[in-house]
Image (cartoon, rainbow over all chains, first blue to last red; front, top):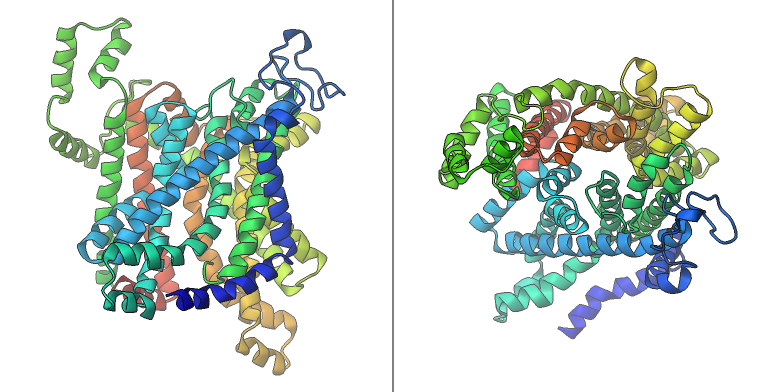
Length: 286
Length: 317
């Protein structure tokens, strides 16, 4: 099997070299790396405690002490945006992980098993795909009640179906490939074939789409928080900060634009990276 | 496409619609707390007695097993009865259908606006690949798709309503009220459409028939507009039509920013007020709208391109 794996992997080494020279991928990767760094190093990078309330210095404009000024409770906006990377990226990454897990599990089961299992699972997928996911997420989190965990749950439930369908398609084409048939012919168990041959071969395209999905999830999560249904104050999640800032929009629009710009930049980075990877990897994925 | 084909296509939507209805019903059963207790509490303003709760549960049919309740609910829904809103006290279906036109107006305006921006921009970018127009279009495609509508909406308010006093800040009224919300809603859509138009036209321009047309000495204008664009427009317009559903959904956020009295703002208000029948009704209502919308797009697409049906049938096997 070693040679076969090497043969499958060979074009990717070539790909890695090409990717490292692609300015779009590189630019996206830099932006994403910056945000990951902000999230991980927030306590070191933020000049102030993001939740330290200081009523005397509330709603102050940008200064040397507070680079982006302070919010309605006198908290340092710059530090809150930095710590916001933890909340927003963390919750988005968790959601994306759960979406992929569920999507892959259902997609592999449907694609590999086929028959009635496939038919039933795909009808369920169809029902979920009948909605734009944001509306379904809105309804789910609206029923469960506001909160960051419920928002993650709602986005998972509303997002997995797209991936289940995609993975099923990939597995269907894989199933007929000679090396899978060979594995079956030499008596490989079903679990062995799925784990060792099917999963590794769908991971690459799924990882590319996960990068794009992460951006979508970040936007959706921020939207829910912006509507007051996701992360709750005093959390410095970007969407929740935006919701807080709405009441002060006319006197301090920067409270809204700082987290808004952070969301936009992070999503631009993820989209550049994802687009570049997708184009390089597999033009067939649209 | 034959009448039988249309009918078959329509029949294939029934399982999807039943799935949607099951989803909407399941959502209602997920709601925390007891529906009967909540209703009584709302009516009287104080915690109801055990006796009253039991009576109300029986009255609402909540003591029946779940499958029975689902069938009853579905039967009522098919007759147009989605229950009574806890907040307004009026039938849920009236609240929803009363507000839907405002959302439809906003989404149609955004659809039109997006097409008017994305088509010329995408075509210009494809015709002059690598030019400043192309770079502009590609930047727009990335930034427009990445900017959340609650940010672009407030930016537009700050510039055109607060700064220039040119347009109203919020609310629904004449055409002036429609401009900022529809631009906000159109932004992400226009970005995606620009990108697709560019890609689709570039692909066609690389085809043999384009080379033949050029070799025949046809003007570049005729080659691009009469030949390549006609083919490239098929996936572009299909995408625009399927994305219309996303515009209806995205309107929820735009409506919150601009206090636009549509169905999205209504549902967010219902969520704040824990009006579960309204939320449940909303899911079924919008689910039905989307299922019908997809059917319409599908039928229109098949009418344009007869190959679609065959291709799909082959995939299904």
